[in-house]
Image (tube, rainbow, N blue to C red):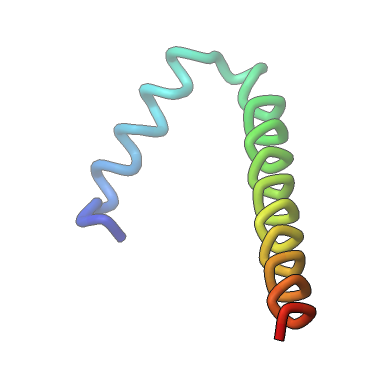
Length: 58
């Protein structure tokens, strides 16, 4: 996974906890999850629209 080992992942987690604090991490994760879900939804909608317009042209 991107050449990251266990030690690097733990170090990143510790840095994130120090920067944002333990109380804000759940809200940060929730916001990130919503953003990813929205991105995937919009991406699949655009793909479906493109496929539908190509079908109508043919």
